[in-house]
Length: 278
Image 1 (cartoon, helix red, strand yellow):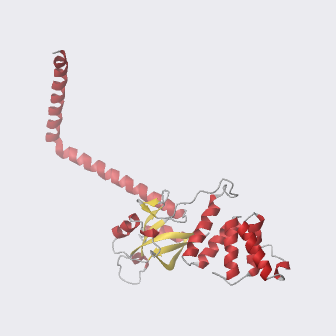
Image 2: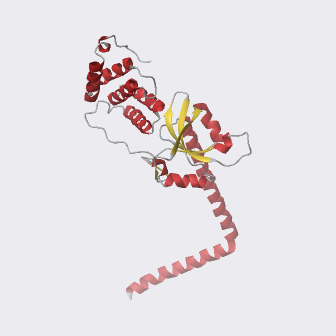
Image 3: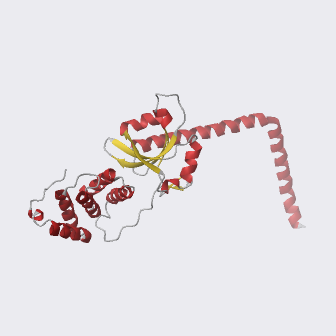
């Protein structure tokens, strides 16, 4: 009885409040609908503006593995426009240029390109064609402005829109000599990936970047390519130089390769070793 007495006023207040709200909605629903529409449009505008600013920032500071949706129809202006979407991924970032891998498939609709990203298609060995796209870094912002670069993404961990776009980086051993500079490992890993794709010229450049910064594994990989003439002419002088640099850091494979090279070229190994590599 006491509980019923206590609940009754509360229920009456709730019913009264419901009636008041219902009358307001019925009487002013047009204005309420307008307010909701304005708020919704405002939210969409702010979200879109923030997205544009973020993508502009990504293009100003490109990084390896960034993903772009490129519309070649906006670039090939010599003929009537037709949408030609391709998925591009940054493979190399130079001081002045950016090199992109491009999907073998050309999509007529942007949503199909987005769907391919979400389905992990970038991880397929046959997804990218061998031909690269090369842009000046100063071109990226203007291309974005004319929708030639329609979208730009940077992976969160290994994902873009839920799709895997790059291999997860393996943790370094606790006694690794370059744990203080993860950028070296990034360049070496990029070189390995390019080498596996038989893109020897770009692989050589990636290994060279990491090797000059002191990455022993990159020095070993670079020396191997120079010894075999992969992506460049055979250059045993440079191969010996980089094997030696890696061996000094305690790289056992480099020391073994250096011994084999000296066994096959005993006179050569007694020659002066250059202090710098072009």
